[in-house]
Length: 250
Image 1 (cartoon, rainbow, N blue to C red):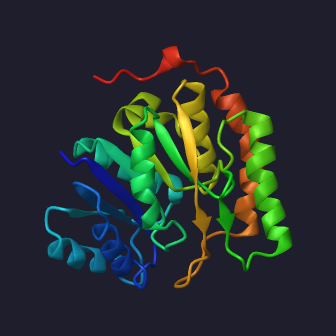
Image 2: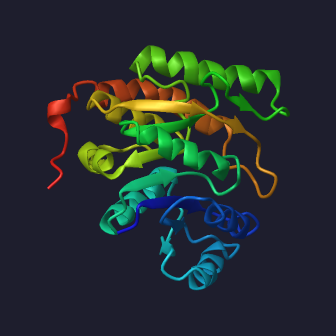
């Protein structure tokens, strides 16, 4: 029963994956395991992950999915597998180093203070983004996360689209992941909103968010537009949830 399972969704990450695995296993974190969720990457990421799993036998695992159908389903599959394997804490992060492993010990320390989810936040006090971001990109992202989503959903974190999060096992079970319907980056908003509506304690730590150095970003304007529209639907879909509607743990 692993103490911590890091869930890494991958699609065409052959350049980043070996470096990320090495960085994660180089942390001073007890009983850290890794689950790579690969969406049938055409560049061979899945096969590379299998090779690395042999090297780190018993500590690294690979879940192969037959098609690329979005970030949300990949994470849901990974969370389900981590829960089945008995992980007590489940960390979600990108494999491209925009989420830096050095913050993980701080996130663990924070969740041990009694929180149900800890978010690595670009927009918490002390957080920052890559210096190469244009003024327009910074303005759009800051407005979306600190103002737009919070005004509509009242989620008590300042980086609602962040994908760097540490969850308690009991939180993910109680949320009932079958409730989650979103794909793309609005998936992150939906997860945070469900957790908030069900009364879980959410908090964040500030991080620096650098742009990826290797490989291609999966974010585009269409995804951002979709997330803005879908946020309103989330309020309608989950606005009536209460803590009494948590899924039972047994």
